[in-house]
Image (cartoon, rainbow over all chains, first blue to last red; front, side):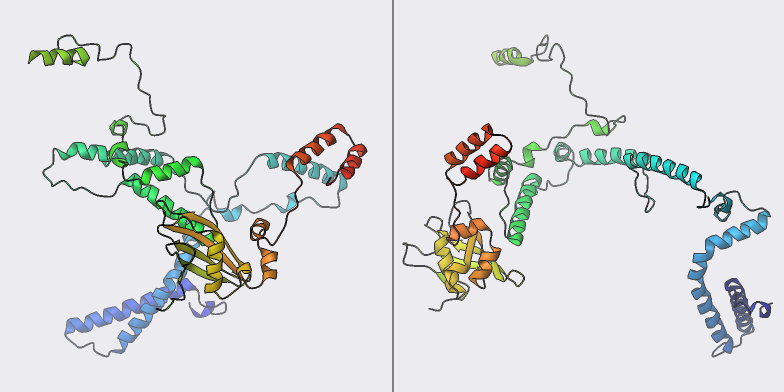
Length: 272
Length: 145
């Protein structure tokens, strides 16, 4: 069986089969010996086992590369019919190639080609180099999750939750906004020194840089406000944030029974 | 009292001294020059003028002052320290070829002749009245008056 294929060389699958067989045979032999209580030290079958193992491991990556083809052929053999979407069947039809000796036809063809070329030039087509991964639905959910996580981890909520935990309060000294400003300035400095050039910073940017790094700024202690929208169930991150509607009567003017608002406060003071 | 080759202490011009230090020194073989970042420490003193820094750098690097070009000096907030850049060319020829014109003008190696602004504007207005070949004639006639 092996000899008649030797003209074209040894088939990979044949080699795999043979090495598997030797491996199994030798393994069984050693197991039998052990069951009988005999020693298997320095037995020649161990060498054969090792050799077969090495061959199999070397074949594995080659087989991985041929996997698709092998599977396809096996499937064809099993089904008995070539599958409909077999790409090998989609070869070009040689009869459809127009011969170049025919002049009239050529002109027609070239004019048609020109038209489509013009149209094609107008429409920008993305060059297909590699397949791009399309996220779609997963991205939306992820954005929602991300927004939720951001509000939960925000400093505002953290401060609010401090009163309910028993952990000791940790005060960090790193102010995010200040650090960002410092980092930006440092970046600019490095750029300028590397390229021996003074970058022109607009007045607004200059003012912003100066303001952020002064000792008096509160930075993210005061400025970090987050809305609670992301924690709602029906939150849609892509939809624009709804503006607070101005009601006709503000709640301050309603101070019936309870002492609310300016006048209410005064009344309260009076009581004492 | 030994002078550190990287420092040069200035004395006579003012009451307090100023120290010139160089950083990020790089020899640019492609442009035949040495480029560096210059730090000047000048407590109790206003920003040091470029000419002084030029002389000091020339002394430090053992060249003449005319191949040293310094620019971009910015004083840190609060005073006392300024940072800028300096280029030291191999020869004056290279300097003239490579440096941008405005820096050569600052150094005094190049002179740009410029007609007065008013003259240029008047000439432009005169040209507006002419058209075609007449305009070209007028341009030639009033050139550099």
